[in-house]
Amino acid sequence: MRKVKRSIILLTVSAMIGVLSACGGSSNGNAGAGSPTASSTSSPEASPGGAAEKQVKISLFQSKVEIAEPLEALAEKYKEETGNEVEVWGSAGDAYATQLQAKLTAGEGPTVFSVATGEEAEKFKSYFADLSNEDYAKNIAPDMALKDGDKVVGVPYGVEGFGLVYNKSLVDPQQMTDLASFTQLLEKFKAEGKNGISLSQEAYFLIGHIMNTPFALQADPQDFIAKLNNGEVKMADTKEFQEFARFLEAIRANAENPLEVKYDTQMGDFAVGETAMVHQGNWSYGMLADFGDLGFDIGMTALPLSGNDKIAVGVASNWVVNAKASADQIKAANAFLNWMFTSETGKNAIVNEFKFIPAMTNIEAENLDPLSQAVYEATNSGETIPWAMNYFPQGIIVNDLAPAAQEFFLNKDMTGEQFLANLDAAWAKGAK
Image 1 (cartoon, rainbow, N blue to C red):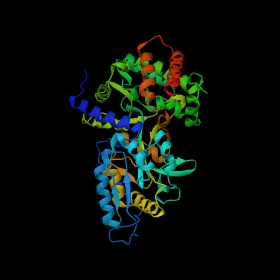
Image 2 (image 1 turned 90 degrees about the vertical axis):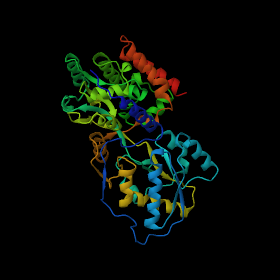
Image 3 (image 1 turned 60 degrees about the vertical axis):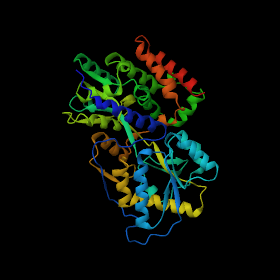
Image 4 (image 1 turned 60 degrees about the horizontal axis):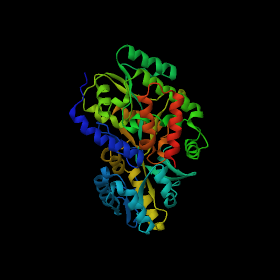
């Protein structure tokens, strides 16, 4: 019997907003119930009472409503500690990109601003200053910097990750390393009357996130996506997608139909031990925490597609410096970012006030929840696959790929080959 709490429904709304916005431009970072603690590994540029260099006043504009207040508080602390001023402009929420474009076009842009990884970053890249030689940029975790060619142009807010969230009392990842062992495990759970893996009906949880894996395993995911957009390659002709289709065939044959499962039910069934694995991210821990002590440990492991053993970790938003600001403003912007990423005050705000999983090697975090800890460790070790989905055509997951996946799970006779043909057709439509 399912024991989904009513309160979880409310949590679903906020969690979904966070997840979907993460894929499209903003995120809520660490959703864990624990209270992370920043630890020091480097010294700040300026400290209370220290002789910080006087800088010109700068402005800052960013997309995340959730950190608007703590960011303003941080700016006040920056002024107290260094005497320098940062004017934090009001967060614009969903209208952020439109307002940012208008301000930059009018020559009234902020000195520091945020951009989402992917299409938004491409759109604004002519405004990005080169941060490659800044001290704080040297601490960005492997493969997490926003780059334009070889230049570092953006510093990540924080990271999020997803993969197979599993019940450690039921699943040993060492026994699930390829399609054959994955399928055998699902068949075993089915025979025992337990659901081996759960997807859910929401577009990103049905197809968007799990489909990231075959893209991320391409030698150059962005190049593959560009060729897919131009009709130069097909998923049906690519071996990683051919195996991906067989993974979904195994899920359809042995697990509960995801079209009959909502996110709250998915997490509720996992929390009470009725489901062994869910394809989810670190943000889902907030829902699990609502159940209190689960009675078992949880972890996050990779979807073992083509032998993959890495979870997907990505950056939703990045800090950039406006290259068209004055030289003094650019200098002041870098001074502020250096202070934020190296001072005790700044590091504490990133972890404890913004609730981000740090994407900087000089910022340690303690007391993270198990899923955030897995993402944090993978980030610092560099053992990750990218969020290739950040480069998908805008809206294609919800408008085109999800309907194709729904048809696959509704039609038990549809083969994996036919599913891939439908995905190729859906992509061609969505990429126009």
